[in-house]
Amino acid sequence: MPRMRDWMFSSATSGLVPAKGFHSLGQLNAWLERTGGRPVCFPCFLKPDNHAGGSVGGGSYHLWKGSVTTPEQLQRKAKRLFDALPGAKLILERNLNGPMVFSETLVHRGRVLRHSYRTLKMRDGQQRGQPGLFSYDAPKGTQTWQFPAVLTAAEARLCSATVRDTVRGLALYSGVFGLQLVLDPDLGCALLD
Image (cartoon, rainbow, N blue to C red; front, side, top):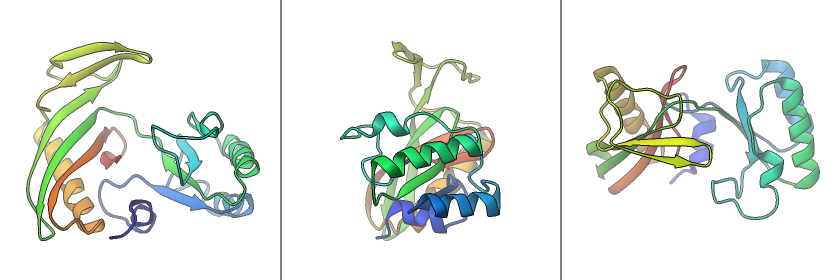
């Protein structure tokens, strides 16, 4: 099975978050000069390939947290990370902004048999036509959850295409898979995790 990040770097299918990997500051600078930051664009996140999840271990989290909004800021952050983590591969990912949709996906022999959108999670300032059923205060504002997620027909089509592309791209064969999607205003429905 391909690694998720490798697939994301090489694919141009629907719903993938543009991402790029770098092994050195020189490689990042050359790419930035050649492309102007596209297709990743700004705002984005720069983080180590390993131990970069929400439950990151070690002491590097304070170095990479927070989004990057300019090429100069990207270069400064990359230098700090390469200095602190010699030999690391850094991942640049587009910042997603929108409600999160959690999809439960049943796959058999590489085919999506069924998928449903179990929950929709919104943060402060993210509005939907139908209010969530459960809200609570969190450190960064109110979290609103909707069970099950109620999507428009257009959102459901975008999310379905993303689910199918993810199953195909990651060569998921059989099982029940949880996919975390984001309804980004610029990218449409994008795979987060």
